[in-house]
Image 1: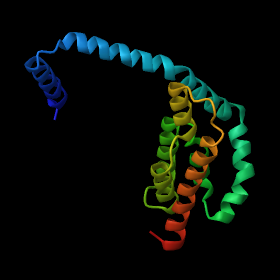
Image 2: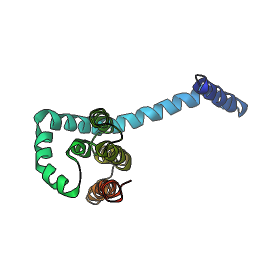
Image 3: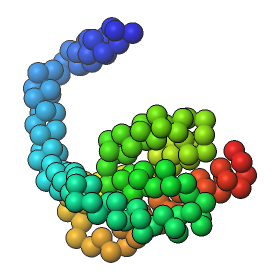
Image 4: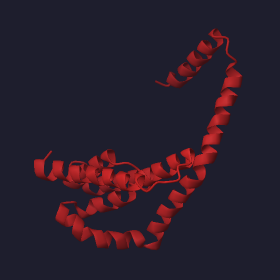
Length: 169
């Protein structure tokens, strides 16, 4: 198992040399392309991470949880899952941290644990992806993409509630 990555590197080098390609030049060109991509996506990435941290630190996340909890209860979403639903569209690593906390607190085989796991797997880091993709492609009009993406996340959440509460999966 520990030799997989070195083995892949050796295979790539051997194939490149057999085709008489300049391995080092291709590597440098690829690294340069990677740096251009990082340059393009870094500012929106920082903006999204700062915004999500500000939401948590300012207490706005708690206020939002208090406002949305009664509606979520009526739909059938347990209160323990709400922080994940709010952080998932903004931060993938943040949502994994929240999921880990939920699983530690409630357990993986509880309704809350299952629902959190399925929601984490069936939704996307919507605003993070939109910020990164639109920054890279220089898309100017996002008026249809954001509502569509949010509706996709809501569909994943509601399908999770339906599957786990009503069908009992």
